[in-house]
Image (tube, rainbow over all chains, first blue to last red; front, top):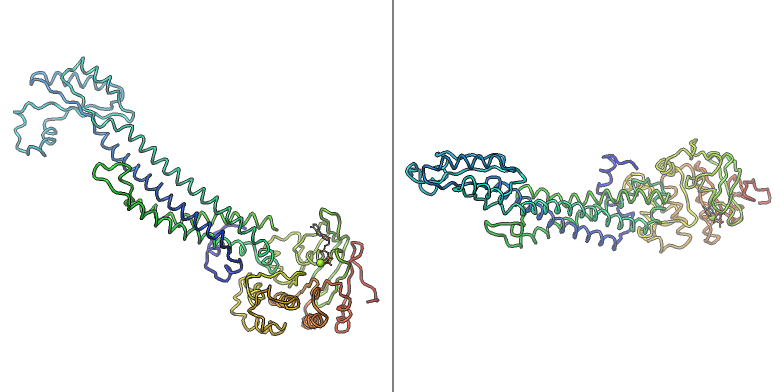
Length: 301
Length: 225
Ligand SMILES: Nc1ncnc2c1ncn2[C@@H]1O[C@H](COP(=O)(O)OP(=O)(O)OP(=O)(O)O)[C@@H](O)[C@H]1O
Ligand SMILES: [Mg+2]
């Protein structure tokens, strides 16, 4: 049995008469339908988890990239010297890519949302801000504080967002786990469909013998089974996906503090993935049944 | 049509058939006899490609069966109508659909052949049983349904394995009449049977050749029949 597009298309063609040659198999039918349902339901959650974890990792990652700031609050005369010293320390700290003192205009831009644009900033004893860009691995904050205390005592390291770094790693790991689960779900679906198809084929050895007797080719015999299982998997998965979506909608959504837990929703491009679950289940069942049928037909030859 | 050249068939239990050579001419009428277990069914299976000879060559329509793929055998089988010893049917489908099954599996539209199907059922006397399921049929009805299924593709060859195995004399005469009719239409017929009465009755109607499997070999039966 070769698999080209034409045979595949023929196998999927709705052919009521060809389907009738195999007697209805109530038990395996319900078994397949139910596993496809359960697997699709689980896949929706794994997908939602993966997508939510991905969103959190991305958002926090972006915030983190701009998170460290050094603030120098010193009497007007000393600011310039302390800034120089702090920059020197920062530039020689492992884990820091770049450190840059903000210009007066930039500082004014930062303050304007609070004080308006007419702020006579030159007259105010504003602290000098230094923007720190770190590497992905980040720097050792405690070590940096010690060195700054020695060389630029007026410098205050503000790294309030850095505590999220382990969470970002966890979120990224969670996303990976989600995708791994989806892969496992697909494999489990294939396994269950294979078992059910094998059972159905074995139970119908007599039917297969009769079909062969009257000149049926393997493709014809296989397609009667393949169509049936692909259709069941598609139907079961469609219901499973729908149920999963409804269940997701029942998870209370969080406010702006949204983390993985309160953000388990499907958004934007995520819908494409979710809507792919039923057809992919059908495809998995199609391939699994085809291989099961090919093997059984070979054995029965 | 069907050609055997030094054919042998062995299985785990030893050699069942040996050194068989035979040419079945188109339009001929053959009987195959022999004691139970002598290998008549096996011989017929070799003749429609369900089994492969373990030695020698079987040629069907001038093609060596050994070189054929399963798909080729399937296509070939549509030109050979087979009435199986135990008349296998799809028990969940009514008689009409079982008879039309060869059309369905070969991709022909059974709806287009509806008139033909009706005629065929009438010919074998099963018009009133058309919607019955196979398990509801009597032995004779099963045999006639199997014959109808065997001829629906208008095959050139019809192989029948014990077609009168478990039916009464009158019914077997009716079946024989159908087979003789087919032979007169030019079909090649081969019937495996140990019903000597059937062979005698056939001899009165058509020219037949009687083969006998004896001691694993194929022999022409004597004039004692
Ligand atoms: N592949 C096989 N494996 C095991 N036994 C086999 C095999 N093929 C044939 N036999 C045996 O060979 C013998 C001949 O079988 P076959 O059905 O051909 O005989 P038969 O002449 O048709 O008998 P009957 O008149 O009872 O129908 C039987 O005993 C059968 O069990
Ligand atoms: Mg037999």
